[in-house]
Image (tube, rainbow over all chains, first blue to last red; front, top):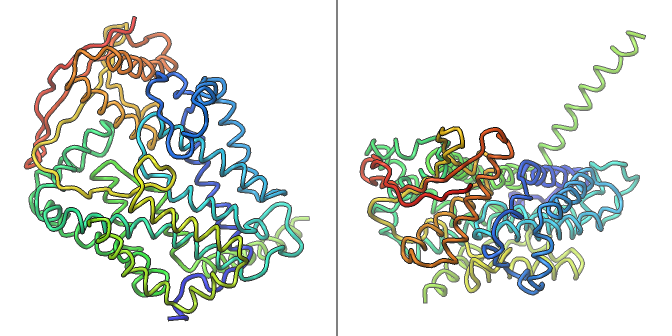
Length: 305
Length: 177
């Protein structure tokens, strides 16, 4: 089992690549979303979530002005860029970014409801705050890693565990609370019908599928298989063959959900490819390819001179 | 009982991971403060799933597609009548990022269902109108020459057996200016 355990060998550069990728994903989430929109919504809609309830409501209402929200977003984007780059002092920058991300994500949910789309990404960000994630693949480059070598594998293993654990929880709840009816009955057709209206500019595939009974049957079978894979998600940490199958099934499940239910957990799909694979191996391959490409370019440049 | 059964199922899957010598060695090798922080995060993730709620952000319960549903679905639609007389679909996804658009659609659905259950609630009515006005404002920012004059709220039934949609049924009109 030891040989197949995920992330037993992780270099500072690999954790650095993961850090850059996670903060880049956050930029893709935060930048296109007009946060000042919250300032136009009625205050009555806002119900603080989690620990945000401990902050006086007046403080939140002061922040919920369009100009204040734009300023908040500007600072957050700056911190995310600095954290992605790995600038010093990384621990302080990453902690500030994580704190502001928590507030940002709490605000958007406080006005609507607590969905799950960015939550795994947020928890992985907390892990990046705890570890020396800017010892490699950072600018300016560090001469020597500050951390003890065992920290880097632990960071990636923890992120993978915290990403996989909710999948197991979802499936356990589904099996205990609703099996077998949720698989055999009309639940899936109902969701295909109801989530079609989530986005009028969406794919419209869900409603089309409902007109094809054999496809509904196929999706129902897929729902059972996906639930089993979700339940067993933590085993990805220790079983390499199962891990490969799991990635195919669960990433496909996210893509199918996008087309049929208008819901795409693209952040989770990317995190799976980033964290539930042999990250060290593909980062090393990428580095050697870049170095080889650089080596072939260098003589050509000198030749031009 | 159901939380206990869920906990037992999760524990059964986690047991081989926890018993893996390599996994334990990796986590036991790091310093105590980091061990404590990671253990707290795992504990909060499990607590969020088993004993906390959807409002215990960021460690919440994950219960997607975890209850039995049946019957036909009801979809709510919002159309903007522009000052020019043109009618366009008022879709949050055209102005917000996908994640925020999804959340906004769910918030609107809850408002509409509250109002359908209790049409005389003035505070709920005002909140719903202000929400639609905010969304319409996003359109107006992009098209100041042809702002939204009113928003039509309609509903449709989507047949779970065939995917066919009923014609839209008018619920109410929110006049903005």
